[in-house]
Image 1 (cartoon, helix red, strand yellow):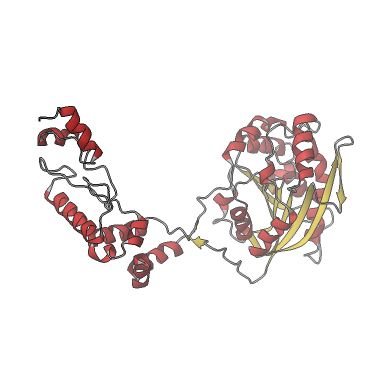
Image 2 (cartoon, rainbow, N blue to C red; image 1 turned 90 degrees about the horizontal axis):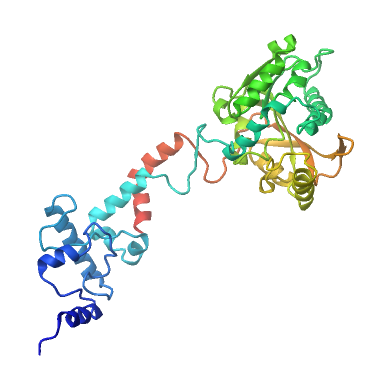
Length: 405
């Protein structure tokens, strides 16, 4: 009895053999040989291949691919490209020795890509959060409006300027009256419109203010032009901290990051860069917001969404940093923390005051250790060292043995 074609097709599919058709039709209907399939499954069977069958299948596939041009195959001949999954090599470890093509291909890939346990450090990395740039661009013309959105920062100068001045004067035996910071070089990171840069310049310091927002730097330069004294003491640059690390290594007596670290995307890299540009014994000054439930309620819900003291979207609570975490990062990167003090802002009076409570805002002062290199964090490898490491590992038999396991 002759079965209809549909019955043959249905029965063959149940057996996993594919539709019974002439060879030419199968060549068109079968999937492209470039589509990868697990090599432990036979093209016509669903059961797993044993080790001997899988070796023979891989070798026959390689032989067929060698005879064909590109990834095309000879007519009516089928071969499957093996899929080199890591777990397959763990299960069939003999494949590392039997199939040399696969072994060298995997070793080459490991040489091209970075090892997962290393992290390159270079000045091409950025700590600037591009998503926040638009917010500061829109407000760039309002920096010097003392009754506007930046009014709390104007008022904060009463605390932070004296905090910086007094701690820096502890490091010098004598200072010039009227210009106590004369002869000191200070880097103001995230200077904005220059609200803190200008008071430090009037105290006699040579200050470089940097900010990634061009509009902020234009506003700062314009306001500086009204005071001829500041023209000689202050320089502004539209750039990020990472861009000037190499050219300003161990240049500054102090680095100021006031209301900045709660906006960066990589605090570890940011602190590392601060360490690099400081002289041995130099000071790092930070003011920021603590990461607490109270800071979320008052700093974001009340200040931004209810009272409108700060524009909406200015802060992200997840980026807030607790004093304990900041101190841990500073200490692990060669900076000794000397002072941590709380700051409280009264939105009704518009003034700041010092406090023992650090649950909202706080200021920190850390000093770069003298004659001590910062410990390199786990997985942190400097540029150049990584390339050398790759070259050594690519020819190191021990690495190859680890890959075989």
